[in-house]
Each structure stands twice: as structure tokens, then as C-alpha cells.
Image 1 (cartoon, rainbow, N blue to C red):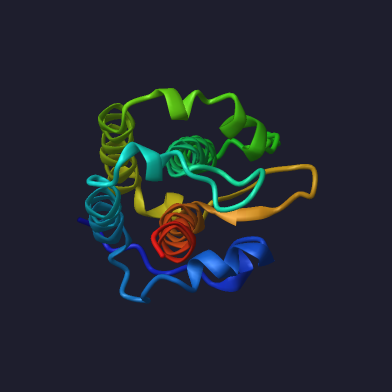
Image 2 (image 1 turned 90 degrees about the horizontal axis):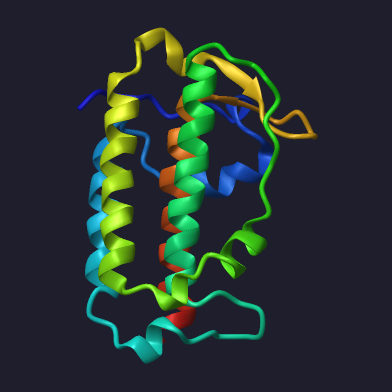
Length: 176
């Protein structure tokens, strides 16, 4: 897999530093994406349904909702990355992650079904970023009403770091 250098702080909005900082500066982001998926699947795969549907506080997501949130977020960021990689700088709207989670139907899905979608998307994500031309990674676009600017390579680091952030949350809040 290709090497994609870690983005600098001027390549993504300030809030994203919490995600990018979770990743090593080795350029092996696509390998990390592959291994992250298997880490999550191993950690969660054997949990009983009761644990998958538990909320540690009112209005917090269940583990199933969190997994579908990760899928939704990855799909959206891949779409954005593709648009910017193809030099399409049309402004894109943000999304309401809480609304997405609330109406996703995640809790009615089997864990196998969620992981099937997650893995298919992850393979597509890796294929997308592995196949982009070298000059695409530094292209930028404005994502939302705040005109947040991202490079294409920062988006793949967001996907991986966002996932690690939720993995840490699951370990901390759900598996005590």
C-alpha cells in the first residue's frame, strides 16, 4: 500500500487535531485503517446483545449506533475526499451525526450485518486512497458553512483517528 504522509495542522480544522494526533507519523495510514477495523471487530465481536444496546448515560449512543456512526462518517468523508481529489471545490453541507444515529436503525441490525457493511466500506476506502494520483492528496475544498479547509490526505487521517477515538471511548465507557 502507498505511503501517505501525515498532514500538517494547516491541512484540517483545529478540532480534528484530537484525531490526527492519535495516529503515528509513519505514513502507513492505509495499513492502520485495515488493522483498526480488525481491532474493533475483535473487541466488539463477542459482546452480548445486552452490552451492544447499553447506554452509559441518557442520550448517549449504543455500541451498535456508534459502529453505524463510524460507517456513516467514513462514507461521508470518502465522498468529500473524492470530490476534492477531482478538484471539485463545490461547498458541501455538514451533517447532523446525532440525527443520523437516531434514525439509523442500528439497534435493530445484527452485528454481523453491521460488520459486513463496515468491512465492505473499509475495503473501498483503502482502495480509493490507494488509487488516487499523487497530486490529489494536497488538493483542498471548503466543507461547511464555516469554510473549513481540508486536504484530501487529512481526510483519510480523520477517518482513522475518528475511529480510534471511538474505540478508546468504547474501552473506557462501555467495557469497564
